[in-house]
Length: 295
Image 1: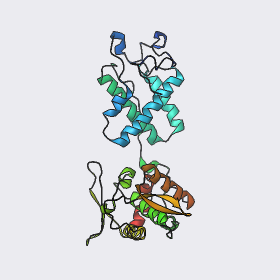
Image 2 (image 1 turned 90 degrees about the vertical axis):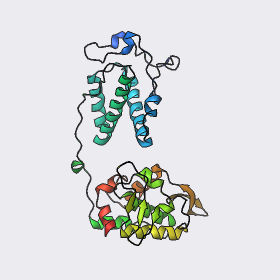
Image 3 (image 1 turned 90 degrees about the horizontal axis):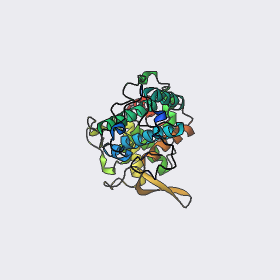
Image 4 (image 1 turned 135 degrees about the vertical axis):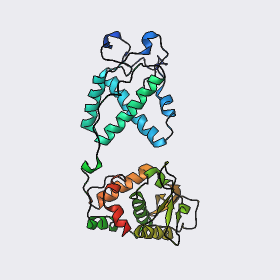
């Protein structure tokens, strides 16, 4: 539920946040409205300034969750004090992982900074909220031994083109510098065998390598998948395609997988193989999967 102060009719059924009884002069940020300031800009204008689509989607979810929390607890988002933000932080800590809490507060800091810049607030109530420092080495993600990793890849049914696709997909997602959004956008022509070793041509963020060397086992997985699927010559088509059921078996379409599909494939395959420690394609990079592919 978003709060649009420029549309009173839309907010008619929502709590009245403008009551002076809820305003705490000693702790809440001063509001420009007290000096006849313009209406608060819509959340959409804040999101439009974020260029990365993944960040934009995540910040939209995080900001919406916070605004819904304000509505549920009777708080005005434009009058919250640091102790209100701290209470929200503690509720988040009890519900989500530390990394998700950190991202939520990155979104809130950016949102309130935007409102300050737009002259809607004088100060940012989130700016000085202390957050825990994250250390990947301390996360409870058990490393897989080589036997578990081998069993994971052996669990893919290579008699099926979908199994071959999933095995190659998981192998690519386990590589460093690769995001799920980038993988599902790959074309067949982005995988290029060379005399000095095959490469994957990526479209990544600044600072990431545009071409990624492909280790021997992953090259084998990709070659087998492309040959069996019969798409090796279709250079401008999606590398990892969705599948539909046809006459009792799955066949590939000409449409690419979505990022959510890739996430679900990794989660489902790890669960089916009874492999603990792999919960998403992010956790693949924190295990020994990448080392296994280098062998």
